[in-house]
Length: 157
Image (tube, rainbow, N blue to C red; front, side, top):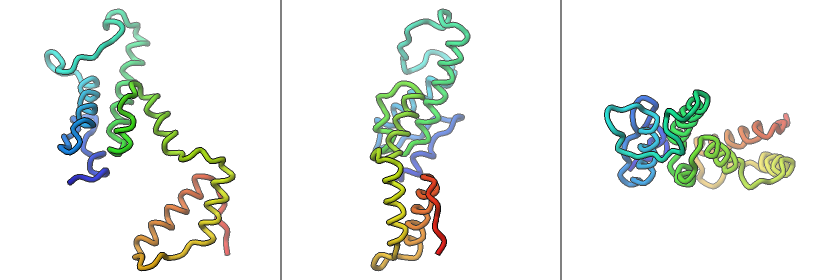
């Protein structure tokens, strides 16, 4: 069984993403995007519908499309499977980036409210039951990182 960490590391710009048998649909979309970005011999096995032919695009439009294809491919490979599956219908790298950014920012709480919640969590932080030292450290490290991201000063006791 593969993990999200493994599945996000299975493809690079120089080789196609590996098939994760339990998640064919995600793999199919990733491989189609990979095929669009690489220049293969003969006809591509996946037909891509475009508004114009290559000759009708200007040099700027061609460069923009190539950059978008590469960005989409890189973003697709860097997302955990559960996030990628949410992003499947998006067509451009910008759409994927905006959707992931919105998804990762959380519930949209005002920043001050988030800071207050993080500070309260910091003040009440303690070990939970039979929690291992490693789990305790990971939870604390995540809390401190969240505090840094929201630019909340860490109080010195």
